[in-house]
Image (cartoon, rainbow, N blue to C red; front, side, top):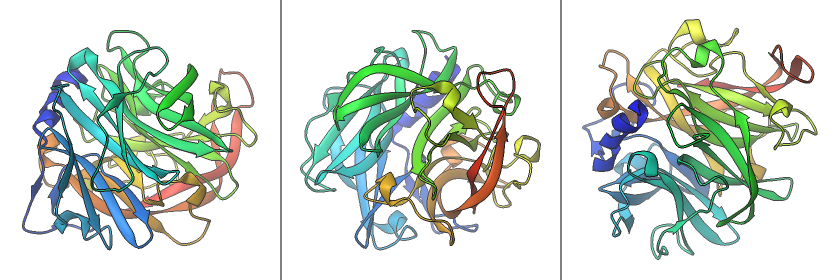
Length: 347
């Protein structure tokens, strides 16, 4: 239960704005779990704040920290800790997905509105298949099908956090079964655990049209927290776990020993994780092409600062596609290697 007990501090909605950034990409916003989308020329972020959910709007990712935080939802039913809201636009409406609850009671909820910063509905619990503990969920559309992806438990106890998928018949209605696509079983994602962690999954589509789920591994309470990649093989079935190939190490992290070969550790921050690809409308159909770098937001702790949840800041960064990258595996069904796009992250 360690991750649940540690995570309880988020129920306070800790978020303070300091005097100014101290390192490359560091914003003045002391907070965690950024979710940011672009709508036209406006950048919209959502965060857990003051026991509820707040939205900011600005003309750039750098300006979000200084933008006023507008409370769009309050926990009037005393659901408990409110974690990691995620915002997308779908069919002319905005949807914010978030986890709420206490301890083993955490489940996923959603609110929606025709406007990004006002008029949201009351919360609605998502009837995720399995009905188990669930956090860090978000929706995306791939090949015409809506999907929901989240971090959860296999059963009713906190043994490990896995990544799951389910189909959605609309932005609020899961349908069918849940499908496991990742478990924290590699040595580099088991450096810090009890439980071991795969969480904060974010979907993106590469220039070849293949689906990626980039997630955070290792305990968020340590500087071993990092980003890793799941890449669906070309023509693969998202519901079949062995059609997913995992990066052979962290792609964005602060410890060289756990980095994938050819990827370097961070220079300015420790434990980068729980990121947001800043996509148009939050839609992976707008994922960027190969070429230049594109906006990214993530949370981390400045190097030289004690690693703690209270010391996490939002950071702006960039990412780009990195082609011809082979992910290898052993002792599982299917081919042992898959080559395609990976991702490089920059502070």
